[in-house]
Length: 345
Image (tube, rainbow, N blue to C red; front, top):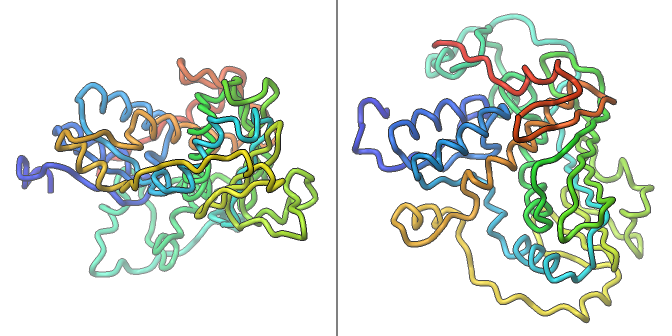
């Protein structure tokens, strides 16, 4: 399309499976096109770093599809944290009930490719493999290591967004995961992950950040930090901020709730203008305003997710991360997994 239409294309929106995000985005950016790419920005960590740098070099208007970033609830959360409504944050828990993992045996067999599918083109830069009905479509590709980023890539990228932005979290310094041993083809069905960050102005020095997926918050329901009063139920997806002065719960879609509720007595309702995640990008192309989640923000956020995906290959082992060097310093076997192996197709 880009080769045929050339200058008739001003901007490109990319909503393909994860493994094609970078190749498609890169093709557009190399021709000077503005891009809107769905989350997670890339399939591999090194790809996110490259696209971030290229967007700056070419001065292109970019946006990643994390629409909830512009929502009133997320923006209120950021303001409440910055104003110190719950004090400095000691712990953050983020979770999703979704299970984009596959713990079974590898898929086998081969089916006839449907007439309306160019299987080679769908595979793109991924390695060749037989077509099997029901495996890749409509969403099974998320479960596969070579195509998707599991639940982290589907929902983690959304739910990490609010605490990362509100607490001004930069590159992690370590990550450790609890999951089953790697099988080389499917993401684990249940994950618990702990990230380490340097303290910020909004966190305590001993701040911790924990994620889990594939079973919902009920898996950790005995954690006192997550027990709600009056037998309240946690949302299936969300984030809990534990501050020195109380707790703030942010459902994935919704507005923050406070425990104890008396915290709200000190809250000033934010005066926030409506925001349109998509329109921001179009307006930025026309020079009217800036995007909310350009690659300068979306790139590092996606790196955080991609590093977690790599950690899933080394359960129980802490990966020490040097972001400027883009290197796991204590486990060399992890570093090749930061980079994609592209097939010519």
